[in-house]
Amino acid sequence: MPLHKIREFYPDYRDQFGDHDVLGYSFYSGTDKIGSVDDLLVDDEGRFRYLVINTGAWIFGKKVLLPIGRARIDYNDKRIYADGLTREQVENLPEYDPNAALDYDYEERVRGVYRPMGTTTGTTGTMASPTSLDATPGMTDDTTLPLGGAPAADRSVNRDVNLGRNYDRSSYRYDYDPDLYNLNERDHQTLRLYEERLVADKTRRKTGEVAVGKHVETETQHVSVPVEKERVVIERVNPTDTDVASTVGTGAFQEGEVVRMEVYEETPDIRKEAFVREEVRVRKEVDRDTVETDETIRKERLDIDKDGNPLTRE
Image (cartoon, rainbow, N blue to C red; front, side):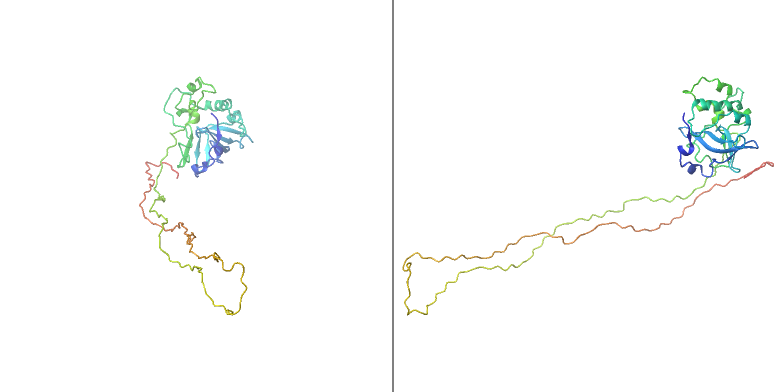
């Protein structure tokens, strides 16, 4: 199964880890500092599989992989422990190259170094589920989070049975090696304290509707249009020189002589034309107000009852 760097697989992983981002934590085997955590590798389903360890305190410049089941985290000291890990094992581990793809053969070499750390008993039992981004958001909210298995005597899966499985690169599953990839629930138990918080949100709902339209009204308007009409005026005038003989033309004393004159008048031409009287713009404005409310919330507090004189640290 392909493996991915946590930053590439889940760029916002810090939002889920919160203050429990283990990248950069110091890495110890017992009381000996080996180096620090450079990266975290997950599979396609987001389950944690390996820590990338810079072993500069032991072997300068060498980076190796630590199966997630071999580690536990102390958030108070910002340390990760792999109890029982030896310098010889670190030297035997294949070097991790962040620019090279990890294949089945490389992982088998890594598993081959860590498997001798497991149990050789024949007992079997219930195994914890692998941790993942989905299963443990933010990894956990308590002081220490187990990312590793129990000591050899407490291993619940028979190592010889695991090594005797018939599998190859196409059939191998991580649950074949629960000692390497599962959690240890004996040394780490989680008690979560919950509190209620007020979450303010807003719901948008329809309060009404405004329809803006138009209708047509009719009215009668009066308009005055001045017009002109022509008329024929016939006037009879007595000549002033009635005593003087006049020369008569050839058409004198003949019937059928007519004078024609055209007569015109104006008539009103009334028509209607449409003009823009006004424009109406419709828009919305938002009025803001603050609504205040009070609610009662609950919060859990830790009660510690000691029987005898056990040592505790908070």
